[in-house]
Length: 81
Image: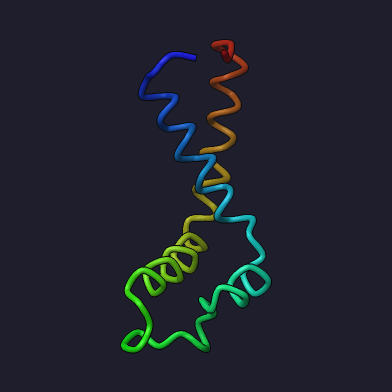
């Protein structure tokens, strides 16, 4: 597999898919990243940003579904590696 823009795009799309399928309460509770228990001032900035990322990725669910479909079509038409 060569290093190309399309492969970087697929990598980002796979990472976004991985974030979308996480079960938020089950995953975040043991790490202390639950939004109800997370205080932006007393918690570490890294924890707050990780919780924010996992919350923000919910808003791109529909575009990610469309991008998955387009990526599958490109792979079928052009032949994936």
